[in-house]
Length: 201
Ligand SMILES: Cc1cc2nc3c(=O)[nH]c(=O)nc-3n(C[C@H](O)[C@H](O)[C@H](O)COP(=O)(O)O)c2cc1C
Image (cartoon, rainbow, N blue to C red; front, side, top):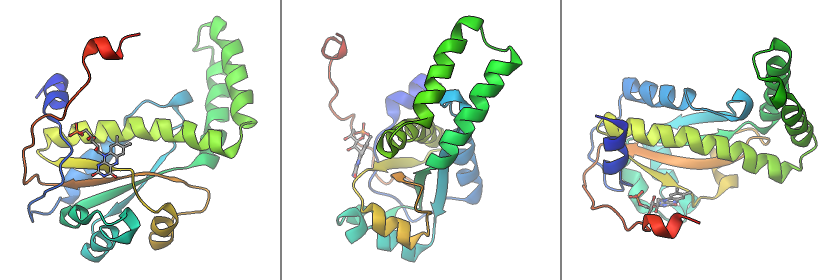
């Protein structure tokens, strides 16, 4: 399967068979996340892999505002952003890039500015910056899942405080998204998309 094919056939899947998602499949999905690009290579994504039936059942209730379909998923990836390490690793990596001579000199000024902006940024700004990196990792996971014959659905509607408490996620790590994963029991048509003319400025 080519990347283009994976992109073309991917759908949000909300009906799953009872077949479990294997540990090997989860490992391949995590590898796809691990390989994702990130700003200054800071890799702020952290995952809690939820496979226990009672946890998935719990997620399908009030914590996701009653999204019952989640109960059928074989696994749910809870994707968090390590904001503290985002700052620290960005600083380390920028210094490495700066000092190693690996980058063209004209980039140095911009990188120094980036570093100073990151170190002085408000928590909300950092949260969104880290979340943008996590979204790239999750996109790679969704496409890798297609190749494995798995279906996924991004869950953005959830009670962050409840999810953090249930899975003991550290206070300083915002939960960016949940990703339901399972063996598809539906094959939906492509959902409507804007025309290219509508997304060109
Ligand atoms: C940021 C984000 C949040 C989303 N939140 C939810 C959600 O809470 N529940 C849900 O069923 N689908 C959710 N979706 C899936 C979208 O509804 C879906 O991607 C969109 O309708 C296009 O359909 P497709 O993924 O099949 O192409 C979310 C998708 C994204 C990217």
